[in-house]
Length: 68
Image (cartoon, one colour):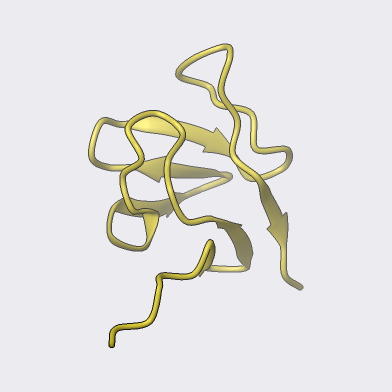
């Protein structure tokens, strides 16, 4: 029986929610670190690594924290 996917993933030095709040794209597949932002490459939504605030939409954010 396959294991349920983790609710958190690691990208670079950051631990974050696995699914984009926009259309629930799997960030382990579509997530990309671009400077100081995580980008969901499925639709281009961007989230600041400092605080998870979405720079594409005003009412969305991603839970994210630095791991080291």
